[in-house]
Image (cartoon, rainbow, N blue to C red; front, side, top):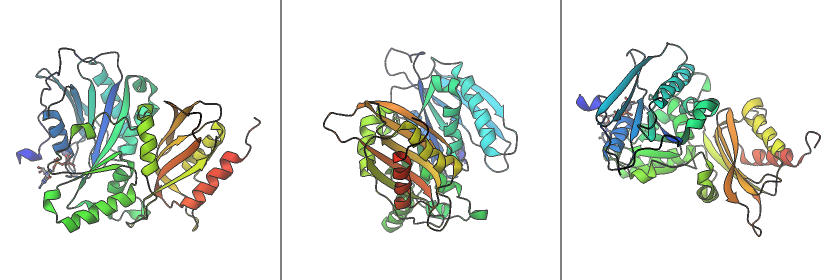
Length: 368
Ligand SMILES: Nc1nc2c(ncn2[C@@H]2O[C@H](COP(=O)(O)OP(=O)(O)OP(=O)(O)O)[C@@H](O)[C@H]2O)c(=O)[nH]1
Ligand SMILES: [Zn+2]
């Protein structure tokens, strides 16, 4: 029974004599994954491993039947701060969004006491809603930044979760969590045969062709694979370019057909045309596949070459939200300027998206 409980928060020993710098932006890592996959085990593992960070943990755990309460606790020097936030029943996304922001705002009043935030979402959460709040809330955005989304998959039950049927063809939570992840941890490998593990890995990869996949028991991972990923910001500029080059378009594998599509188009593009392309895809949803289904993009990543900008620009999208940010990486004189996008979602057709992209970015729009 004991290990079913949420972790007792363990004080983190500061690495050196220096405390966290209160002026610095704090990274947030979202830990998501289906019920019982091993999120809390991972959290516990991170908290007890040797590292030089002071970590604040936000648990967002309310199982079925339990009161809708959230516990927010940070642990520092053996002291435990705790606040309980009541969530109103109803739409999970909105509740999580509103109260999540509040939780972190409250947490930020104690800034200086921690230098990293780990946020465990409930097993049924859409991490996109949680991730979005860091972009929507500009005040928060100046204090913290989203470092990455980790999705823990249960090696034993993962496939079953990923293929679960939802009414009206909705995407199930497990698939959404995998689609949004920057890092996927297939946990509980002790419970499956090599063959079963292969099946899970193949299915997970078919959904998300981008994320790094690790396999673990008891969520034991090398922390350098988990923390400070810089998955959303320009610090990942150079590595992102390398990573994007290795992504391959996948074949939809599971029932709901989430897959990864990637393509490259050479040349410079106009920022307004890129915005138009993305907005058609994410907002207007007027880009359709061969069968007339609107393409449904859950996650978008890319590096593009914007006319008039000397540096590479990162494109990040989570559901309807997206963001362009200039990186520190400059296009070199002899380098071909190019645009590479990775899209994860449903009803994606690589050839059609690429055509629409080319048509949109090369067309003259507006009056410039
Ligand atoms: N056999 C086995 N059991 C594991 C492993 N990792 C975690 N568990 C167990 O699986 C159960 C669920 O783990 P948790 O870490 O609580 O999972 P969770 O994702 O936080 O669960 P919820 O918060 O309820 O969604 C616990 O009893 C863990 O001890 C593993 O690698 N192998
Ligand atoms: Zn948990």
